[in-house]
Length: 553
Image (cartoon, rainbow, N blue to C red; front, top):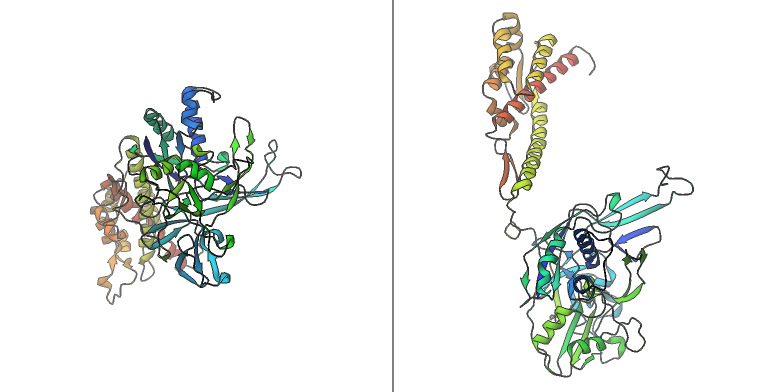
């Protein structure tokens, strides 16, 4: 038995539609359902085998996808540390107006609290569907969402018409988020194939042709099952007569053994799973005060082979908490086996996940989610095509930042008085600068400076009598201002000083562990931005002359 961890990063919004909203809208689950991951793995398997349809009766196909021996768990949001969060237990509540203190009905019935002031955390708020509990602290996590409005288009005309022009709305998961899950495999021989199928998943969910569903899947190394749990607590044995809490970590489908209908009553199925007699604990005041808190939700799905939606069913919602009393000892091995297998139907799609005694504190203190940690999230080391792409991306990011600094440096330069250099001289120099820019040919600009500005007195006087200074400098003497001729000579003879002028001496961009692009030390980049700085200052001088002459832009 092995565990394969995987992470799904959304490169586009994800639409994992659930049964909610009006007919003209699609509302996504707040997580990546295991059914989506299994369906994408099935598609990858069919591509690999070059088949048009699965043989559902084949032993290897049933073992991989259908009979529950391979289980694709839901991918839930990760916190800033990269830890997978879990559905918020529905037994948690706070007193109205006191949201920092969280109480748990599954641990202790608090009779002193006015029922009208009780607000259940998970049932009443979509803003905190996931949480993480450590000791007596809890924090909540909610994935970001994006709402888009679309208009139906006629397939032939390519636009909305009176007959085909309905307006509908998609409430999807926002791109850029990461979700984590596991694939549980009973047969070790399937581990390599399952990992390979996961790595070939590139799209999930609906409307993949409309800008939704592109993902990046990161598959971790297979792990041994020993000591593994979805929660952070260790397994402890449950003694005869002891009460224990079972929290559902996903939607769960349970059928009544007598009627065959879906039911909320978890006790018979759990008793069969454990092989131990148990009973549901109820409060002293009767059924209405029992400490278990659950909710039923409609679940569905879609069968691509049929081309039809699956029959809707009532499932016990993830986060539902049940309190039982054991009528015999329950050893840790039995608890571990129950958590490993899950309970109910459609376990291969992530349904039926449960945890024993996740909650242990009657009173929890609400804290803020942790901030990102560089130690908890080490940067990957890139190679091959990924390294080349990262180099290009870092270079573009660096240039974007430098372009902003260049604009600011040009805007910060001030001309104390009307520039005496003529428009003809400015235009000639700008033409040469633009011709020299593609190859960073500073020698051509220096040649023009030597042959025209320095040797021709009339031209030299124009450049010598035009002054520049940076914004914010309080200069009282003309000698403290910089002559245009000297400014040009310094830029062309020392192109590396352009980074000082832009304030980019230490500017660099990093991607991963081994890709870093810096401005300092890049001679070609320094020549390019020196020429662009000169051209920008000359353009500003030309504009200043037009303004002084009363001309327009």
